Length: 324
Image (cartoon, rainbow, N blue to C red; front, top):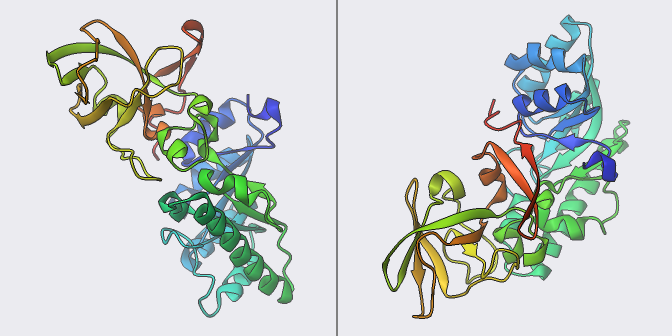
């Protein structure tokens, strides 16, 4: 569906996901993840079925991939991951020798250097649109500065790839960026609404839950626990307590501000009612917008496509559980 709407390729988090999508005929797959050369056999098999690229950010790992690809007589596209502030993976762009590291990667046999890649995950802590925009601007400046240093050393930098849903709408305005990877855009979720990336009406993934208990006037029990909604907290602007937003009706994405999912067990969601007007009773259905759509998607076997309350189709979550 995404390729049909103009995407030139897709990103996956792990090799297991990439294998599923390669089997489905996706021609261009990017893994913005630090793959270890222990997976060389799987990568080589993928190269026979699709165009694959991934990241490196450590000298030993880069050499390991170079040795493995050279021994097999193959080449693979790689990008150098740059830490632009999230402090998870990536080289420090301000460290002495950062540009030299990129050049050394580009010189390794078996590796085709494609460019620089980053993830501004720290933007999830932004307190305003202005702050999110500043993260996107700073990210682009860091990448463009490092790219210029690499070019000065005689190595071209064809791609500068950024990927974070909160910053995407600002990154698209930045000079030098060649690729956006706004992974959560396909669904959006409560966190993205809190961050200003989406409206309630933009959110495509909700959980259909049933009321299974009403033990007190101020308490409702739903059948969507941590195995359904996950225990991820929301981020973004304040005022978003709980484990999801309960909508007022099944076909209108309007939050019921009187209901807060304050606690999850494996199979139960305990909902606090802040006024005495809630008429929910056992057997009633509600829609819940989860805090984090990505995790929820990996917890279910299939998704139901609906228009209002009408079921249109059913899709298997083919890459569910592909964590390696």
